[in-house]
Length: 115
Image (cartoon, rainbow, N blue to C red; front, side):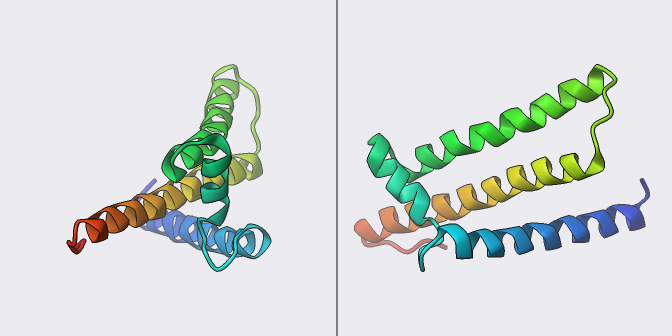
């Protein structure tokens, strides 16, 4: 894949990720985009980051299952790859948001600011 093709694929992927996150926000979130992970954390007596990580594990397994299927010579559709990789990227983006929020909250409790 040359640079131009890569850039086009990257732009398409980022656009799809933003689109899906927007749709999912209207389905699952409140004004707090991390609401479901915080509620799951309370239910599981864990941190929101750990709760999110647990949910993300399902998506990680899905990606590995596709890799294994490809290695066995199975024909995995591009649409399925698109869905599963997109889900995984979105969970990583949500994890990043949770980490930022956590670090910001911790710093505020110490009276500091986060860059």
